[in-house]
Amino acid sequence: MTSVNSDKLSSARFAEATDAFVEVFTASVGFDKRMAQQDIQGSTAHAVMLCACGILTEQERDAIVGGLVQIGEEIASGKFAWSIKQEDVHMNIEARLTDLIGVAGKKLHTGRSRNDQVATDIRLYLRSEIVQITAQITRLQTAILDLAEQNADTIMPGFTHLQVAQPITFGHHLMAWFEMLARDRERLRDCSGRINVMPLGAAALAGTSYPIDRNLTAELLGFSGPSANSLDSVSDRDFAIEFTAAASLIMMHLSRFSEELVLWSSAQFDFIDMPDAFCTGSSIMPQKKNPDVPELVRGKSGRVTGHLMSLLMLMKGQPLAYNKDNQEDKEPLFDTVDTLINCLRAYADMVPHIRAKKENMYGSAKRGFATATDLADYLVRKGMAFRDAHEVVGLAVRLGLASGRDLSELSLVELQQFSVLVAEDVFDYLTLEGSVAARKHVGGTAPDTVRSAIQLARKRLMS
Ligand code: ARG
Image 1 (spheres, helix red, strand yellow):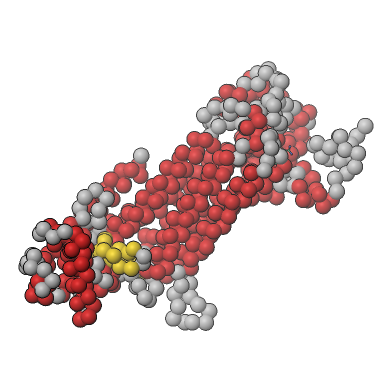
Image 2 (cartoon, protein in one colour):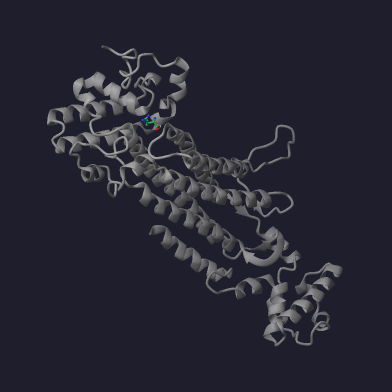
């Protein structure tokens, strides 16, 4: 008895052909063909292991491995004929293998299932993408360090509530970006460890009755070892969620950087010059230079966080073990990888060309009474209680506001009317330079401290 869908690999049980729309609706090859090389890599290791365990002959193994090499080449050169009749990447490759080598091709699926196969493919795919993503993070961190180095002495206002708070150096501000990315890199490394566990051998859900050697397959594929529970192996997508969570955090960081670049490049702040090559003009307003790249990156961060929510919702209602729902994991995951790599790349290309407008940054810090805390600290050092000093400085700021002057522009006599503790040396503390130079403890904004932090960061990047 032949089946109604004789061109399909899994159809003998059916008396009716698959509905034409259902065939399209359930197919995943349109997107999961992206994992073709990983699928071939997994199948090759599986065949080698089956032979080592006496389940395939050497001839069968060699025919399979040779066929898979050819298929890999057909796919790489764009000659492979993908078909939705074969549903997904796994069945397309297996069907082609059987076309090429005959009956040995039909033996490849011995002791495995698409359920452990797909879980393995995704892990292999993510493992290699994380290497690319980490390389882009390193490029961006290096660009940030270089810009920070050029601006270790550049004074700008630091903000809280987006109101001028205290003077800082631009280099210090940039090093805050560096730290966010350093944590991102750690998170990816940490999640790689959990990705690098091998599901193959779990088969459909219960394992297989063939005498397979999962340690060997794991070793051949560079996994740290086989997974511990077959049911968990085929149904677990925690690793994809974890990765997407790490990606969402990276995108959130890029979005925060973007917000600052957009603000700083506006006429109102005018702190930086954005490279023309990363901006666009307006179709109607000739004067415009819009910071499109940061804006787009800020916009795309929502998309990646959306994918994180999709994956969490995808998993929350699923009983053990594999369910077809899981096929929905790939598009959010692939789009997360693409979006993340593109945004990191755009940033790594753009950051080296950002120029600080040092005078504007300085002028802005000067206008905002940024050294008010320094005056309070000065009075405390002379013996006043901090709360009283806070009050005194408030009065001095009021005088400055009323007369349109910074604290450093008030006269000694004027300052002394608020406290007799004020002496000539007060002006050493009221300057922006004095204020930043005083913050020279670990993690502080003093130019020399920033230079040491940059040096240390360069070493951390190597490790
Ligand atoms: N295309 C499927 C997926 O992406 C592969 C696994 C299918 N397994 C199954 N029993 N239908 O998840």
